[in-house]
Image (cartoon, rainbow, N blue to C red):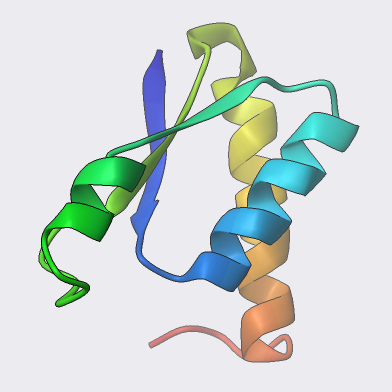
Length: 76
């Protein structure tokens, strides 16, 4: 498995895993329980992992999320 992204944004995690599932890309969120146990100080980010052969397509889905989040503006 390959790491796609690290984040503590619950909205992004939910949206991304749903979008990946719609593209038939299996995603596993690592560190979810560890993140909760550390007291919600955001010290430990959750990792979204995908199979190596799905990584390129998963990156396209993630790029779509970034475009939506920024409203199409380039990220500095």
